[in-house]
Image (cartoon, rainbow, N blue to C red; front, side, top):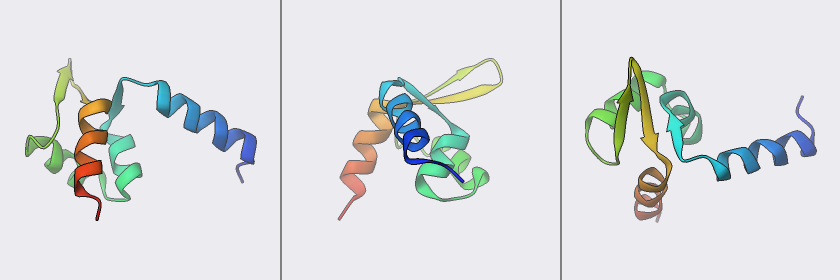
Length: 70
């Protein structure tokens, strides 16, 4: 079980990041990792590959998500 302090620390870490991993995108959206990879391939936000790793621009993802909200 996470304490409120741990949750706050994790939120601060997310706020200071410049990129998200695909796993983080899946967690944020509460979707499967395979669906998160599909979204990355749809060019909805900026994605870069670093070796075999896929990273998503936090700014472009957050802006995309803000546009999707009702």
